Image 1 (cartoon, rainbow, N blue to C red):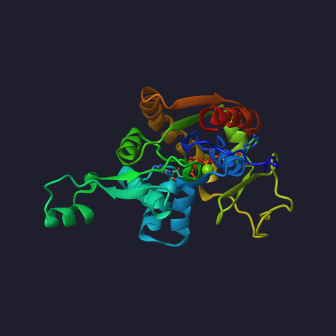
Image 2 (image 1 turned 90 degrees about the vertical axis):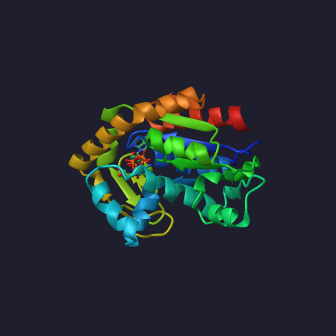
Length: 259
Ligand code: AP5
Ligand code: MG
């Protein structure tokens, strides 16, 4: 965790972190939350919360995650866009055109014409947020484009051999999503979360076979996703063997764009 004083932003950052499993998305998110007082949503953490709570979505997602596959695009879009509204980071803004009848308006507001609503964002720096792990496919990105204008997309480019070594040592505090590594950023007391004192666990999808499938699923879905954001002029790629190499570069780029 950074001990530095938080850097104030001048305008709202609406960021996406893209990177292979184990590239350090969760680790970088935690640091950015401290450094820039950003809020974040991790798609993986939300799915794991649903699994713990045994929601219908969680029960469905559990099998897919254990097999190293991806959750269906429409399910993910609904989940994350819903979460953005729920947290008040964006607001549903019905865009009724003149001439819409009352029953037509009700139909729109009830969701029958969901395309007619778009999410409103504020440019106030306090409305900044970060998405970790969403979107993960071009289709998800296109759906997000319809709802909210993101303004910075970071591609974490970390070599596969480095990633495999890290995953072998990863421990997590599931309720908060805090991430540790036995070799690199160990908890103060082995096996115990620094903040709550609760036990750390290994993620069920971190076994070597599942992890290999996750890497493959990532490789297949990512090229079109990166191309999508490159075309939109939002993509910024940062390469490094360690989060300590990447963090200062990422911080400097955020300052350049938003502070
Ligand atoms: P998710 O939880 O998002 O997993 P992921 O993308 O596979 O990424 P990880 O969380 O494994 O890695 P990370 O990049 O956050 O790395 P971390 O910081 O932990 O998703 C899980 C599953 O949910 C998916 O497989 C899919 O099924 C489903 N899903 C989620 N989103 C979806 C979507 N949008 N659409 C469809 N399905 C979706 O770092 C890794 C380790 O490295 C840690 O131990 C850390 O301490 C360590 N580390 C970090 N930096 C360093 C360093 N410098 N040196 C040494 N170790 C380091
Ligand atoms: Mg993560």
